[in-house]
Image (cartoon, rainbow, N blue to C red; front, side, top):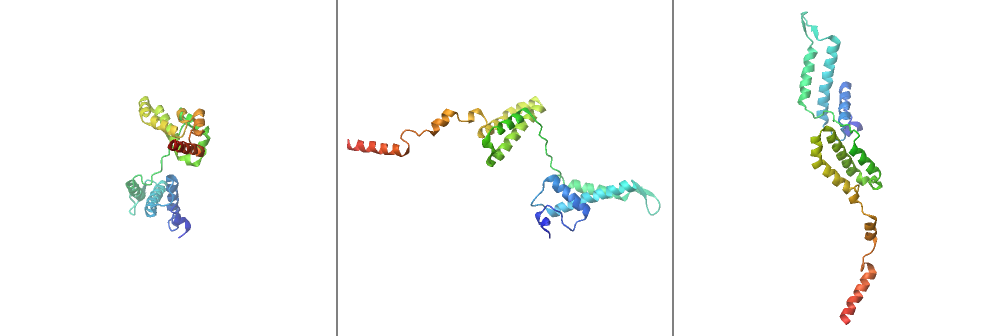
Amino acid sequence: MSNNEVSGVEPPERVPADVAVVWREIVAANDLAGRVDRAALETFATLIARMRAARSQVDREGMVVKDGRGRVVPHPALLIERQCADAVRQWGDRFAPLVKPRRRSGYVADATAAAIVAAPHLNLKKYAGAVAVLKTLAWMIDEAQRESMDALQKAMSTTVPVYLKAAADLQLTPASIPSPKARAEASEPKPGSGKAGKVISMQERANGRTG
């Protein structure tokens, strides 16, 4: 067995070329990688390949042909195509292509993208997932606005609060960013803190006992 077969992405070397073509189409359309039910995928790809072959034969030879007795009858490949199509439908959406929505530009999405660019700390890899979630929420808000007023009103009580919390967690809202005064106060040592403060405190306690 080759290394490609072990990877679970490339089709087995034993399958016909037309089945291998369908296999690769399914893998590409579904972003399949790593662990794949290879037996199931091979069966499904074989059904698709046979259905296509039957359809091509009908296209070449016509919907009707003459049988051994010279009678005009429906092309036998029509039955094969129909049976394969029925079998494919029984698989449901197991190997159906993934639907990847196209994200259009929108007011909230554009503003969010600009805010992220202006926040250097979000360039760190540890924020990548949270940034992706925030962008998705912004896109959902824009889509709700495009859909209808009802959808937007619903988003205002569901998606928008989640978006604002995520933005605050990433320090993208004014209230979540410490003011210069607060940062300065946080950096200043409190009275009695540090080694000197501890020494003074110990001296005061000692004086109280001897007084």
